[in-house]
Length: 495
Image (cartoon, rainbow, N blue to C red; front, side):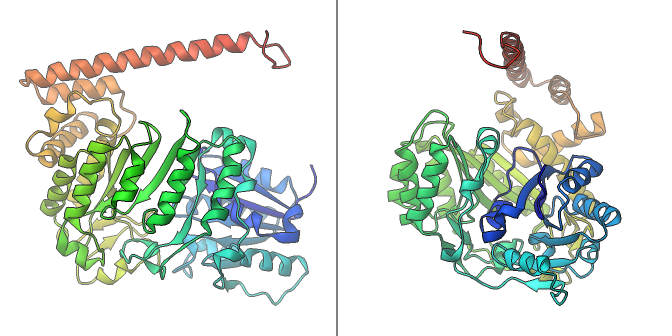
């Protein structure tokens, strides 16, 4: 294997994720690109195997993208690399090390840190290191640049990426909103890429076989003219296997955008809609601008008039929020009927302005990633732990799609209180929130409602549906195994 002087690497949460950030760095390496290689791993891979694979290429420089989900594992990998090959130059960057990094072990282990958007600065730093410049500082703050100065990364998704992984794309970068729990609150505004150039790249991806496009834009529907142009592009390339994911501003859904949504059949369009809270006082406290009534109207409209899958978000533990006010937001969102409600626990991301409320609202966070809230002045630690369990069981029951017949009966009248009581019962029965078989979960739900005949009937329907799906899955797996046996030793199909 030929030597690559520069290795671009990160530890993804799952194999199916393909790092957009690494491909931006690679695309903008200029003349250094031929001396570079992308190596992606996952956080579940053994550190020794990751180190072995990196050193197999005998690099001079290894750059790591560091995020809240991989900093611990990245630290272990970097520590081993430095122990085995002390002279290797480690460059780190990414949101988890761009702010409040001075106390981080990873910062101490690394040779250089680029804070901010490193797309272009990484090339300059690598060139400096490769020429033996010993005056290059450890801390480098990336200079601002125009999006037009960037080489786009999409040609660097491989055939394997396109066939087996989620393809991440961005039509704009930044965010104009100032929600204090989010790192995007530090942006000045959102900047769109040249839409025609972006769509040219999307066309190349599509012609290469890409059918799953996950837009990472914080505000896809901020500039409606661009949103319409992008949707029209995909409408012209409609196929049964097309899937698009967008993050939607909940209170901005004008008629021209609505008019296009009817072209997308079920299973092809997913909107992630961050509600976070409907409590107006809390919204004001964390600088979140949201017209709640307009947001509700839009969710209702999407539910009734489009076939889009609606994934909505709430955050538990925001300053000023009580258990009762969160319950109210939850109940209001359940009433709107989205396909999923993701229940997140507030995290204190490094650099976010949420820290300014710590003293006034007695916010106590875990000191290790992912820095989740432990308690506030209005929510005690026991309530936070209960909501952790609530969230896990909610994913297993409500978001799984396996309890569609009995779920409406569980949530009737007071969804939050009902499901909180159920989650307490389930945790009391199993002592955990993980590794619970669906059938055992169904039995436990039935035990919580011994006299509810209607719910037992509905649960029996869910059980039957689950068993039918499981049987079909086993049959499909069997057919795949049989098909494998029909292939020649060379791997070609027998005619």
